[in-house]
Image 1 (cartoon, helix red, strand yellow):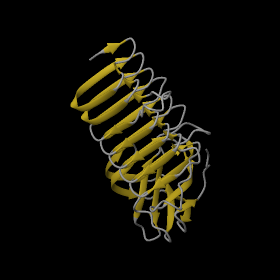
Image 2: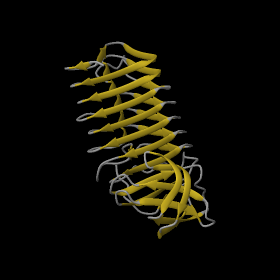
Image 3: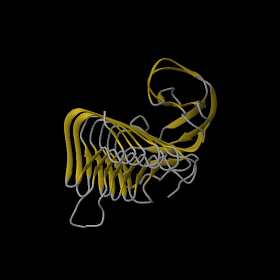
Image 4: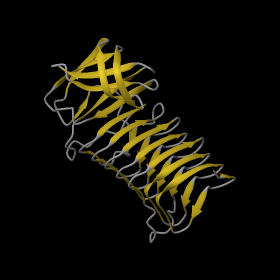
Length: 282
């Protein structure tokens, strides 16, 4: 296990991983490609850093494309002052199990973020959970993204195109970017928040479960999208209650039986993007 005074792995033109196990603790970046791209196909990475966890960070030469692509593997990043995973151009996640706990943005890209599969957990204590300075597209996977208080967001794409066509998305923070209804094919809802450790449950008027979530922190805005949401359907929102025989992904229940608490609201998904509360931000 390397313990570095600066970067754990620093390369100029490219970093490509096809497997193996890497554990590192550094006072700088974990894996940094200074003038090229990063591709992770497989492997297990445990990265504890002060600055960026994994970064393709060159942005001063237009002939260089500092993209970052994750096709698989298990990645766990903890950063005390920086970002988790950063690309100065396009960040693409096709598969893999990714967990980032950071001070700055959890995931960040200069031009585009694509999430096509895998499981992604991003938790920032002072900034956005997932932040694209350009467009953001989610076509699959399971994503839980936690930002800080307003104006920080669970999902932030600076009012650029935010396209959702699949996957399960839960974003919590002080605000959220609004999915672009004209290009999205999977419904989403923006809701007001709740208190730390509270259970939040959404079910159809017929009683079919759509979302059960234990809130990890107090926040004001939640964005939720899932194949279980259907346009034209009405939903009830509950707080409290209990869940038996359950499994979770960072507070998102993926199995179990919910016993109802108190109904706290309702909404009808009348359009592709339903605003039932919360704050829409940058």
